[in-house]
Length: 243
Image (cartoon, rainbow, N blue to C red; front, side, top):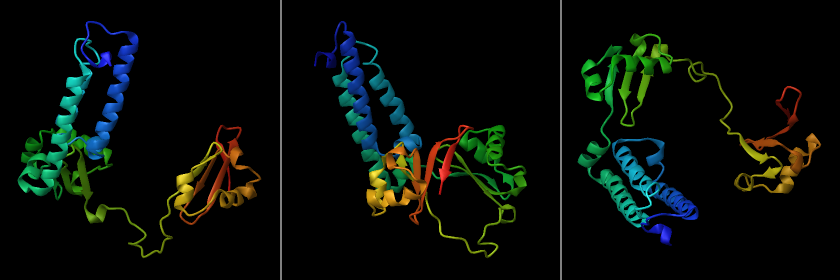
């Protein structure tokens, strides 16, 4: 465990061991902090990411620094992060500070210039984000808000929103999700168990394609238990399919 302590010099193996320990430790730390810390960087998430990156990076580049201090400091920061996140759910004042409410940038087609100053973004940046949402006329925007995560949510006026089957009173089939159940000849057993089936059922489903499971490049299943089999690549380099 000498690689864990500060040294005048480290061997190649000790540097590798430090990297492995730090990598595994960061994986565990990210798991403890939860999905929010990696899905979006809000105020508190940004601070933690900035600090943790510096704490772990230094021992990985300087043999005179031990890993023990960095690991202890990181654990303390993780505890503080989890505690602050939990307390923000209980104390509205803390929640408002850590997760401020969205800022209205556009209301009924009118830019709220004072809100741009509060959000510290320019008009050019606002129009850039509107172009990403395919907005060609600001007058068509009913509401645009600056979210705490640093994104802009845009809502069009109702007369400019696309028609849906519900608007046309058209009945549609229920939503189904398609998931891969065989990939490169291997069955995804968690998916198979989730739909309450076994390998024998799957073999019967792919039987019309005249293939064994080991020969299937890809097969998918939907919520109605329909299996679609994809076979070898065709001459155009595309995956051929058999229903």
